[in-house]
Amino acid sequence: MSQSLHDLFNTLPQVGRISWIGIRPERKAPMIELASVEAVAGKGLAGDRYSSKNGKRQVTLIQGEHLSAIASMLGKESVPPELLRRNLVVTGINLLALKDKQFRLGDALLEYTGLCHPCSAMEATFGAGGYNAVRGHGGITARIIEGGEIKLGAAVNAIVAFTSS
Image (cartoon, rainbow, N blue to C red; front, side, top):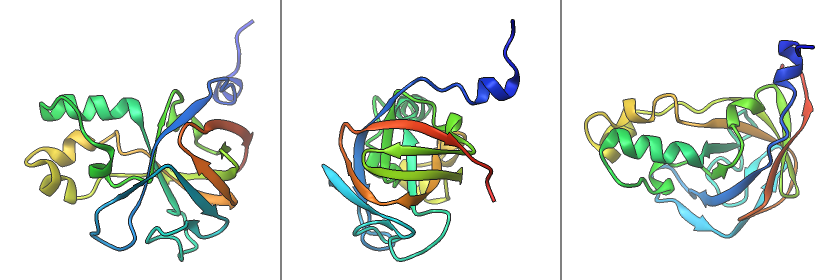
């Protein structure tokens, strides 16, 4: 018996892990790497420049496996996560499979709000072609529903399908 597309979208047994955490206290400031961060419901990550805004981009996540793909397209051995200016690097789970879902990161509950597209700063960061190297690999944005601590190594679990507004 074959599964419906709806069933396939909602079957996500993989558990991801947080492999890097970073915040930016202000625009254009360097990322600060952390071992843990407090997620504040309706606001963002404590100390991050987006933490006072109640919007769809409270947290940005990028898939760790995509860092190798970006590096390969740039002809580099590796790309440090802080250069991509995302808050969290997640491995072991396909972030796009979290679309229309809520998910738990450590103690916090988040919901997928959209794709996190690269900006023109990627050209300045990586040189010519930087923007296109990140295109399609920029990660996702999320909103914090329930606050809590997010630590390195914390599990990432899809828990509830929801209807986006």
